[in-house]
Length: 334
Ligand code: UT7
Image 1 (cartoon, rainbow, N blue to C red):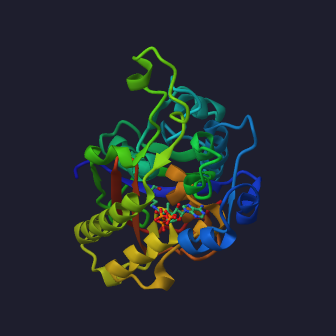
Image 2: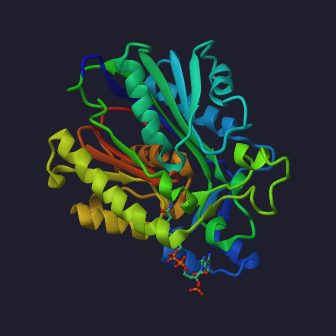
């Protein structure tokens, strides 16, 4: 790498106040608290109020990350999201304006639950190419806006939230410097996670979407298998590229898809349970927001501390996946 490294210098997370418990679902769907807890590890999650959009969540998390960095400037904003405010234009420019960042470069990245790591690679590239010196990377999803409220297989899992980090140009050996990132995808398996309607494929027919096609669908069991395989493999690769041994990983931060997936990947990698970060019990699966929200909450609660070697990994629709490493910097998470 010839250009500067991207160094994490601020982080913030946000969940909307409205809390939905497993019992709330059990009252209206054929499900139970016992099933949801044992099969996913989720007990409750935060959900937006009607009228709230992804940009509203993004502005909250972005404000906190900028405050955490102690500097309210950025010269690029990358927004990772599955649920933009509108199909066109991108949501990022509005978020940049609302944050008072002016007429900076701002665009969306779409990689579903891997969005934060794809966004991290994009932000790192902007800094390495000297396009930007400070990048605000926000990952936000109003995921419940694409969920079928009657579909028990997805409604109990997905939820809303946002997380953001500030990255500045720095040196590769500084704490907070983003290590080598490994990304991948498999479009042959795009049907495992999809919203079939609403895009050019359906619109070009001139017909309205078929009933239900506006909603997110996931073939859970197959997705589960690929999530375990891919996150294990890509994590191993990222650790190796960083020049670490798996035993040297102090904190394992994985996309919060399912507690059983996290245990399985952690075990395969040989990362002991006490080193695995988790917040799925209280926030569910928040899509692109999942990883930065996990990092922000863990750091704010003292479960992630300066100097610790952190392994990040994510997996989602596309299919898409990624992993990376960094040494956690001295930063106050908000
Ligand atoms: O974030 C992006 C990546 N996402 C993931 O990686 C998620 C991967 N998949 C999963 O986490 C799990 O597959 C799920 C949590 C989605 C489902 O858990 P599972 O243990 O794989 O269940 P299953 O799909 O094999 O279903 C088992 C049974 C089925 O009933 P039958 O066919 O055995 O009679 C389902 O209909 O559980 C039923 N079921 C439910 N029962 C009660 C599915 N959802 C529910 C529910 N409540 N909410």
